[in-house]
Amino acid sequence: MLSLSAAQALSVARVAPPQPRRLPKRCNAVIFIFLNIKGSETAMTHIAILGAGFAALTAVRELRRRKVQADITVIAPRDDLHYLPSSIWIPAGLRSGAGLRLPLARFFARHGVTHLTASVTGMDAARRTVQTDAGPITADHILIATGGRFLRKLPGIDNAIIPCEGLAPAEAIAARFAALTSGTIAIGMATNPAEPGAIRGGPMFEYAFILDTLLRRQGRRDAVRLVFFSPAERPGARLGEKAVDGILAEFARRGIETHLGHKMVRIDPDRVVTEGGEIAADLILFQPGMTGPAWLAQSDLPLSPGGMVQADALCRVEGHPGVWVAGDAGSFPGPDWMPKQAHQADLQAAAAAANIAAELQGRVPGKAFTPELVCIMDTLDSGMLVFRRGKLNLVLPRLKPLHWLKRAFERHYLRAYR
Ligand SMILES: Cc1cc2nc3c(=O)[nH]c(=O)nc-3n(C[C@H](O)[C@H](O)[C@H](O)COP(=O)(O)OP(=O)(O)OC[C@H]3O[C@@H](n4cnc5c(N)ncnc54)[C@H](O)[C@@H]3O)c2cc1C
Image (cartoon, rainbow, N blue to C red):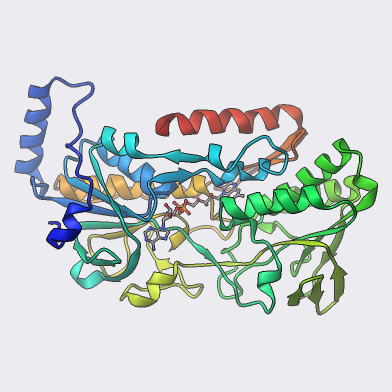
């Protein structure tokens, strides 16, 4: 069921339902009739997917792969995918902001998806109604996939660039880095004290290593000091002890200084102030802890201590049948190392889609997502691999081919959206 005012409905680009690609039309019709006898999917079934990032788009693909015929509306302010994992290469000129913005119109058309250009502003989860700046939308199933947000509580936070806030910050880092003839670059990260797992450290290690490699290539490493700071004494703990040892050894090998184990006080325009001293700096990159999207404050959704949507292992939002969450917007049960990563977002989205499909087909949903961490920490000239699943914690040392593997993975992953 989709409810939009007439004027708003006009602004929605309706696309024909997906055409069967492998099966002859008659087979699809048989499957469709079968599903409707057996399950609860009807021609009017409507799924609203909030966001158009990793989790949202994976859910679209999985729902269609599972032959879900329902109307799908993707609600997001943009109709392009920003491939942020490769934004670390913008300062080196390996990638550009424009090249990492992938238009989604063809993807939406291929999958028979309606894109509503709108921002979610709140939700009445009990009634499965999403409030947007283009009006309310009611759906039979809602998947929340609007990503996370970085805490901006630290005094002076605007004096730092937060690299993971999007492509624009990566472009700003590139410009400031190119203009820096000498001085200090301070790179740091912290977590959300209310939910220690709400942290994204990998890109900050990558920035430290990549800027070091670049400065050396450009013959100006001696003129620029690099300092890594964090309130944690051993940053990156979720990657595992061996990985942290490897990161700290790599900092030492490259002459990247560390300022660890001191609580943050504030960030001034020219320094980072901690309880354990100050770091004078000309360029400050800082990744604060993560929390849920701002619109959750206008909802009746259950929230975790860190401010994300509380979910179970099947990606269901507790207490709200038909409302699901995947990716950075959610807080999920699992091991304490479970990452806020695109890879994990994809695994959660696939599980949510499988469970929605099961419900529509009259089956009991039972697909739990797999907690898994896969990280190639790039240094521009090589990479380190960390993998975690269950009790397995694999760490590969710095290897040149891992840089190329990360580039090959990007190419492979984005094929679905090109
Ligand atoms: C520099 C960098 C490097 C990274 N490296 C890696 C890596 O190597 N491997 C890895 O797995 N992960 C990596 N990540 C993390 C990864 O990008 C995130 O974990 C992933 O984007 C989370 O996916 P998501 O679908 O939950 O949210 P997002 O991808 O953030 O998508 C959120 C979507 O919601 C939309 N949206 C936001 N607000 C609203 C609203 N109010 N209404 C409607 N729509 C809204 C956004 O426009 C967007 O389309 C990296 C991130 C960064 C920034």
